[in-house]
Image (cartoon, rainbow, N blue to C red; front, side, top):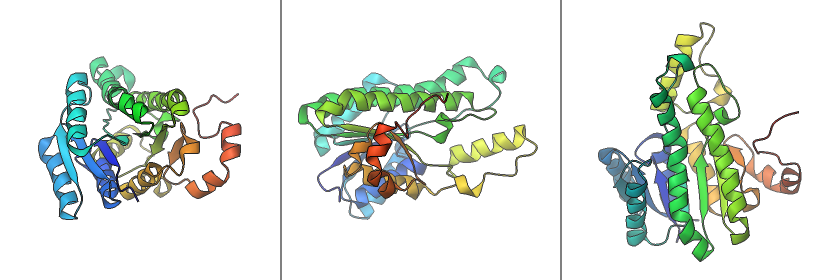
Length: 267
């Protein structure tokens, strides 16, 4: 389904990012994973190669502009021109705003917003020159809502939704697209950490509602479908893994006309 595509997945050494990389490779894309931990990235690569896929990794901090650009250039040099960027790398840091170190709070913005910005900025010139490419930002429903102790994470994801829409608007005439996806609540290390924060802060919290919990494969399958181009008319929007993409495509005219699945203030 994705044969001939070259995909980069940031934060691809574990959790959702690893599962996305594995799914893209299973659909015949050549995949590069980028992140900070060399050993975990290599594990992802090994799992893909063991299944007959093509993969490599580059270890770097996505907030380091020079290092990230060098990593992306190296991927392009080995695998070919990039056609898909999945900005998945992210962190969460919770607690009441007044108890958090401002630098720790801002670090969440650096990773969750600056990282996608830098990666997108680096790959777009090549995509624009070729008239082909898609950006998928792994956002969160937290970008549309906020709970106790999540001001940093929610702010970063709200900004990422706006970055997605802005990117889509900038590249629309060139035939490129950009999406945000919400993977739901996934039992990754970050998910477990947030669950513990909620338990500590809210005595009435009884655990995450099953309606919001999804396996990482749900996000991976959604990324794989978006990578095919079938949903390009919905560029700029956030799509949740529980959304019926087929129904959304059938209703695309209405969605576009009424600015649905976009970050908007309610009046």
